[in-house]
Amino acid sequence: MSTRTLDGRVAIVTGAARGLGRAIAERLGAEGAHLVLADVEVDGVRDTARVLTDRGIDALALNVDVADEGTVQEMADAALARHGRIDILVNNAAVYGALRRRPFTDIPVEEWNHVIDVNLRGPFLCARAVFPAMRDSDQGRIVNIASAVFFSGSPQWAHYVSSKGGLIALTRALAMEVGIHGITVNAVAPGFTMTEASMSLIEDAALYGVERGAIRRAETPDDVVGTVAFLASDEGRFITGQTIVVDGGRQLH
Image (cartoon, rainbow, N blue to C red; front, side):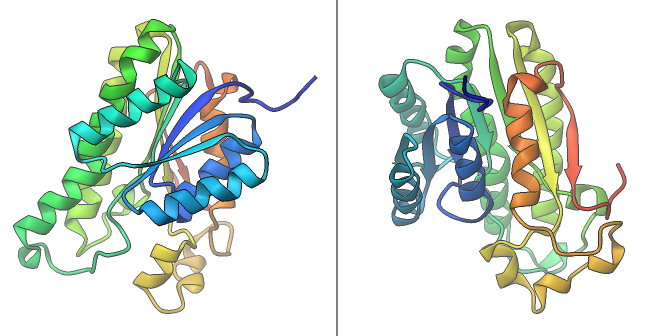
């Protein structure tokens, strides 16, 4: 008998072209999930799907802007057309690597709106799009990728911190609404993780903040994906509305 925890489940992962999203897709696929991968980076998400397909994992790549209601609905429709069900949603897509730190008084309103649109409106739209399928099957797992910056405040990054704080709030609100349908909603809050986006933000990224952690090394995507897979599985069926910080003990929450 297979010991894979997600055999036959259908998982949507947003922001799957690279970085943490790609690592999450790889882990869920290795656990037996059928994958629907979404990203605005078309070439990147297609490459992720190709790599996973070569490993024998069922993966469909879609061009999706999570801030656009129409393409989000098309994503849900495509998952249902291909598999007839949606079991897992991982809201990972976010504006992050392109941002630069600056005082909140210097953040253009257009940039603020863009970050909130993708990082908070996006998970809201994605959850709303998959909810009918999860409700009809009386089960579902929604995992929102937040950030430990919510707990630290991380100055001069007001829009990003606010978007991730809002996502934690959305996690709690949705959990209370959809639990009656057997759907869990949780957040995973990584620390500063060694992805392409993180390494573009700061020099010597692998050393950043290491001295503040209980575990004194840089965080990698592999440190995060196990928690996501756990919450997406039946093992996490009685955990909901929670935010799990995965940062090696830099924030004790």
